[in-house]
Length: 408
Ligand SMILES: Cc1cc2nc3c(=O)[nH]c(=O)nc-3n(C[C@H](O)[C@H](O)[C@H](O)COP(=O)(O)OP(=O)(O)OC[C@H]3O[C@@H](n4cnc5c(N)ncnc54)[C@H](O)[C@@H]3O)c2cc1C
Image 1 (cartoon, rainbow, N blue to C red):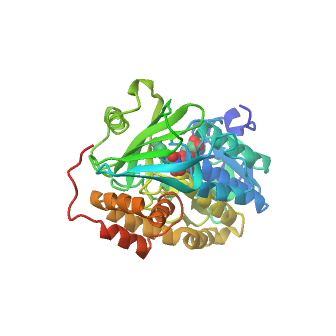
Image 2: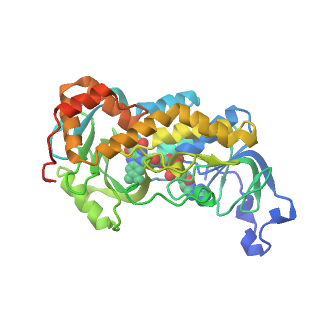
């Protein structure tokens, strides 16, 4: 398609097919780059942009052709736009109307609806991700279609599939990351991994707002409806995994139960995917291999938001990768800790507290009473906010002794 350079992988037998284990064993590889980024989602495009801005020769690999779909709520928080501004991409949400408000329904049924401190957007990932990839290519990154299967760390380089070498590799290949597994880290265990399904349906009537309906049954779980601005909304449902497999039929039943005003017969384009929650993360890198975005389990455990964290970690990983290769992992770990460390600690504690439904119901009540509590909760769920003492106290004031029985 329009974005791809001709891929040598597309024209040659693979190392496995040649039966020689890859040309690299003989000491030569076809291509050498300063930085190779695996995965061209938000984390990968941000990494490629940041590394290019630091002057590195960058190869961006993805197994898919762009534009491509990605199962997502398509909700873009204002914080994500801050990172994109920093990367010199000011127009990623152009043409999509701002969503000024967020309505949050607690597991007990109470609700708060207020203006967001800054508006959010709903931009289908087919559009959003292709814009970011185009920006990375315009900045000078080479783009190739290729599915990475093998990652070999050598003393002075990293070799992918025996054919391409990098001084540093950024693994931005999402929830099922091959690069992460090559570093010895399996996918997140149950309770730290969610599964969600999304589709597109006619938008609900009324003023545009992000709607999040948390679920008393199957807690922690919630459904959403995010209007796009073209008469449709992205609708979906997700829940945290607990030792039993979740069927598509179950996810759709819960979606229908929590969004009764959306006719299930009108929902199109259904697609499900895992969300690795940030309550369980591998180390951000080892040697010359770094992980960013979902590959590093950076999904917010409250909201399932991951795009802001993917962009930010991608920016930091790309910047670190473009410097001295031997210190890339250390530099990345330091900048990531400085930028997100406290937020990640606070959101893990908050997620642990929120395992009790009554805490979330009390937070909804406190947010209805008090705009500052609402803002703190939004910052914690959509950005890099922290749990502050005042918010905890306001929630504590309205905390009942036990959970209400689940209604929905
Ligand atoms: C149903 C659902 C709803 C969500 N809703 C929201 C929301 O509203 N807002 C929000 O902020 N977040 C949301 N998220 C989370 C968000 O989608 C992710 O956090 C985000 O996509 C992470 O970006 P990424 O770049 O790390 O990974 P991805 O976007 O998954 O990109 C990874 C890329 O790597 C490529 N790839 C994978 N393996 C290989 C390989 N071996 N070789 C080459 N390429 C490879 C893939 O093709 C893909 O393009 C949602 C997630 C789900 C599942």
